[in-house]
Length: 187
Image (spheres, rainbow, N blue to C red):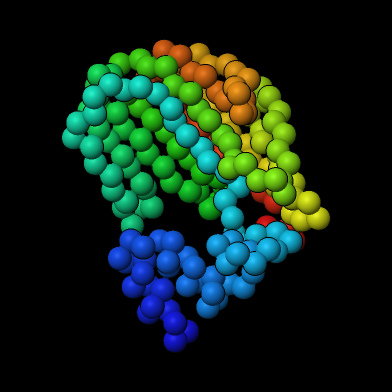
């Protein structure tokens, strides 16, 4: 605990690599940025969820987090009008909820992927209402992430060069429900 102020100071100075290295050194052990291999790196991300579209020139960009409601919101003005992106986590539903709305219909790719890791194999399955990503570490934890989609546009699954993704066309509203699970006991 005596090292906590040093870790906090690095993070507050936005030196995230140093803060992570110090936290791992003082509190973590092996794996991660410690440079000492571990069987499975604890607390690493399952993957990334991306909205990829081309809104044109962006103006009036804002981001905020309401600590009372837990709602993270990004807004900006673009060629497709005002864009609002909201995200929150529902602990009662064990689900991440992400939505995007625009004033004019847009085409958006919704990507669920994971940074390449030679210790981890990834497979994808097409779902009737979304996409499922499964991963397993050599001699380690297995996990799944499933993204369900609700939209006023049309969507399909496209086999991309790295991973399949959801291609949405003509949408002014996209709602994503993301659930993640592991086979770790109690997780």
